[in-house]
Image (tube, rainbow, N blue to C red):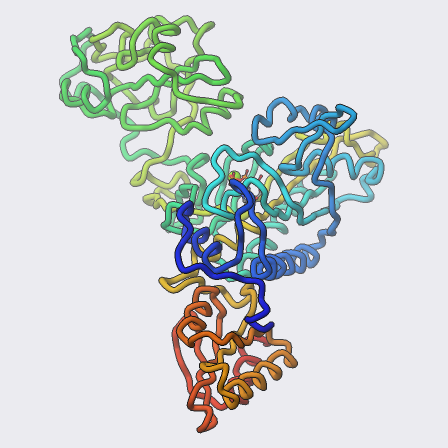
Length: 570
Ligand code: ATP
Ligand code: MG
């Protein structure tokens, strides 16, 4: 490709609506162009990157025994009504009516469609297992599209769905996919960590995410992991051993139950100071509204509620903190002094977090303003469940070593769905005994566009993108320093022709611009290698430069071509 012909416009400045570095660089280097919020055109350079990622995905999925198909992007509502997700999917599902008034939606995912595709075709246990995948555009009306391709509204996903007649068969395929995913990301130049995760709107019980670990804030997930064993989990799913599971307020002089005045003392921090007691000896009450119903969480004062866990625990779709008016309405008291004591359990659901299990002689609100109850003990042991966020410094639930925390970008995930879709949708096969059984299903997603962006988050420097060579749009940029100089241009052209003939993906920067401009673009776009043809061509030498290391070698043109062949084609 000649640079003068390449459909690309590099910008001098970063776009001002971009926060994530991958977003900034993709726009500035001419890979994507925004159409509207969260929706982008993938320009020729981007398209080449995506094609490469897709090729790797397809090769590995095919090698793992999956088969490619392609399913529709626009789907009828009745499928979603059948699965029960039409009501529960919320505003992320973009709904529309066709000219006949039929309700439709833009595919955010394809569980419903694949289930309808296989029914009537996969009918017997003898045909199972089967794994079908496609690479398709999805639309999710994300509440906060941001970070460019990392969280778009329209994006490209590879999703695969497997069908089984037993849990063992599903588990085998789950492992098979986990191995394929590790290979896919490795071939894209990305190290990933497989972490346990919440199953979210997709559903199912067992699921893992593949995370690219990063320290930047564009890593939207927190991951807790253990360096001693292989425990790793998304914070929405992580559990831990507490440093001090047993706490006793007696240590702070509160061994007898008494009501104490705590005027205007509302927060845990204030209360801890005022009563001279550790926050781990205070039982905090936090009121939430889950699908318009009040839920009161009682949790140890030094712990925080993990809202995804709470959402799952109460089986709600949406959750938010209650306002102070709602606290008055449901508990008859202002926030700061709330409690489960005396609460009508038919009106307010009360949840006790696991962290409160080992508390003795603790302080809690009495549902009376400006007072707290100290030296309290549970009168009857409540049922404890886990709805709290792990904190750095807590310990691995498997081996007890300290847990570490890092941020991650979820590039893929795998789910054991079980019969969540097949049952309500009546997708059955006939087993050995001639009985109808719902398929046992798995599903496996990879964010194609997000993977490309994650690679940039990982591999860039002050000058631009540093693509792993496996997914770079082109491998080599041949730059004649002075395109008007016949000798330089002639030599550059020859190198370019030889590289192209050898199958190396090459750009010839034949633009009449200054060398500085061409070098800047070359680095911004992130070609893994550059061959510069300058004055030393008179001595028969060119410069061969590696984008990643910055290493420069003086080689003859033929040596440079040979070097590219060796690095790029083996
Ligand atoms: P997230 O937790 O990031 O919202 P998800 O768990 O809802 O994603 P899935 O529905 O399982 O994601 O989709 C599979 C993959 O698609 C994800 O692992 C991610 O890589 C990608 N993906 C999901 N949402 C987006 C988005 N809005 N923009 C780009 N890629 C996305
Ligand atoms: Mg997720």
